[in-house]
Image (cartoon, rainbow, N blue to C red; front, side):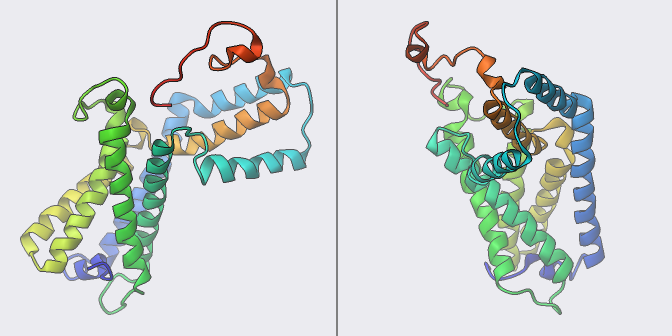
Length: 264
């Protein structure tokens, strides 16, 4: 099963063109949803204005080389390794989910566009990456949902309590879960169950990629920009004008020692 391209088997009942069209539409929905989110929430304007304010308060001017170095450090620490998470469990769960999604989406695109039928068998690596990516998302996603979420781990709420902000995580977990179950039943020859879970897979994937304006999907594009802006403000001295952090009163000789949030 792990080495079988589920989309080439699907080509018997659904044309490769239809599958490819669906993938293109999902990509367009993500792009359009992100642009709408930026305009509606004025995220780009916020970051631009914030950078302008920080620049006016800076005590030093950074060179192009320094800014490039900060950008590389941001990618290496904040994007690729999620260094903003101090909680190791939260960080591992995030990395599993992030890299799992990358593998899952990449392998899906390659198999749908390059190896859509049994007549063009895909190399073993792509089905393996597709299944591995889906499994990684499930492990990281379920771990986060049931054991790491702030309102569950720190505030004692039920893991089955749902709010609007949960749309992204739930649709992501559902997409990869239904994809794996669909692949299992398809490989086993259980056509009715395979069809059922394929439909659930498509529905959840449509919600995931089509629900960008109402979920935290676009958040993954804003976080690197926010991390870069933070590092720039620290490097040019503008961040030094902010109040001291509450977790370091002894250093500044003020206040009392405060305990960090349990989810931090």
